[in-house]
Image 1 (tube, helix red, strand yellow):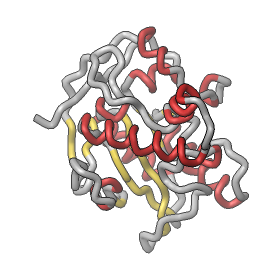
Image 2 (tube, one colour):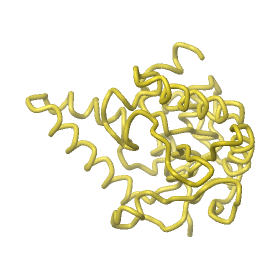
Image 3 (cartoon, rainbow, N blue to C red):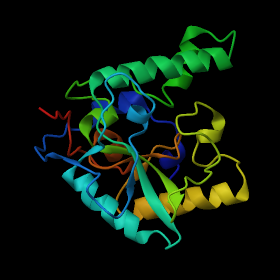
Image 4 (spheres, rainbow, N blue to C red):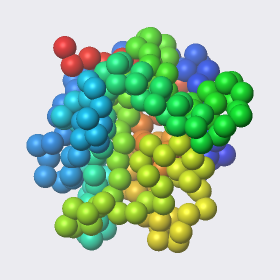
Length: 223
């Protein structure tokens, strides 16, 4: 893992990446028997959230490789993929509010800086789209063979230092994060260092962390 792959995302880096133009379709994840599909925001009742996890075909294909790379006593859980702009906007605002509540007294600029470690501003701009709006981002975790979610050392979407992939969490949680990151990395994904659950393939964030000059995927739509 390079030094860059352990650093917070530089959101201005999108300007250095050639935008993606692939017309690869979005496909539903739930028909696949090799993982659990649990659309977290729909389950939470977030307005506009989808009852299905949608992914670019290339992301779907690589998730199959990741699922097969995991030990037999665990399985992959897909929590989220492509998001509508409205959902991204609400998530950014919700996480920003949580950061402000958890850190009273911080200046607004510092609240924004911390928030951006855990949520993108909503954008379908061709040059710098929100990662999930490209269909090239996927949020995942692990479950046991009975489908029980495993403790990964922080809650999903927890905007705290514990959510960084390399955070000093318990030994079992560190081992599970390593297992997940190794399987996803073998399949061609890059990890967002501030979120152990977030992985990218084909979008500008993937291009940035993998030192690629161009993205494959730009903004996508279900329509």
